Length: 331
Image (cartoon, rainbow, N blue to C red; front, side):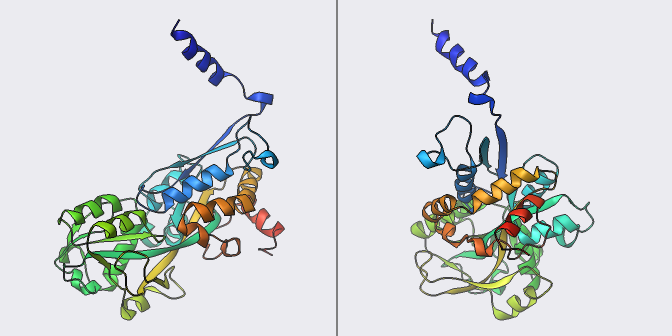
């Protein structure tokens, strides 16, 4: 008799959706659970979902794309996401603007590799700030002080690793000058608490959950990027822009910290159905999603429709392009 409930559940799951509507599954590759990609991806996945059988939006139900069931998928980050989206292992994902451009064109850090030409953009979401987090007692006041220190550049497959190497190169530092580790932000923070790490790089929206937690448990500080290094990394041919992490973002931050940032893109494949991506883009920018983002995470308040096309250097998906033309954001 105990098998009966399980059997009924199985039959229910195998039955066609009410009204015969099919479910469309749509995965969003995020990043590690320590970064901002993951919580933002979860909010967006919930907002754009509207599987069959629910109450209408006007009656308090989901306001997403009818028949769509989206999910946020943890990953190593930008590099892994562009590769998985390109080969069809994910329907979409988040990636830094520079990583997406290099992958789509086979240039920069993807030079010598086959271009992932089918990458397209849905939207630019928010600026990702470069964080260099250091133990307050490690004697690190600028990037040059990283020489000889134990420094994590993040894990392979992350956009942080790509950008950390660019910054170090601009400062005249290489792997031989550091004791290099490859830890995602959560593990880097744990290693720093244990005294096993002097500094780590992280690229993401602020406040980062991992850094906020670390700052509440240990004495840490953010290392500024000085003007000479910033000048080398900004300009018409780059994706970095000058930015600051504001005073008070993390415990112990008594002043603004100069840094660089790069745009976070939501990407997909060119062969995704135009009507589907048009609907996804429309729902991304509706009032309901904007409210969920604003209340769901501090970085969500920086995701604005008027910035949707800023820093997008890869082709727009035709469905997204159609939405932006209809919305008057593209001519």
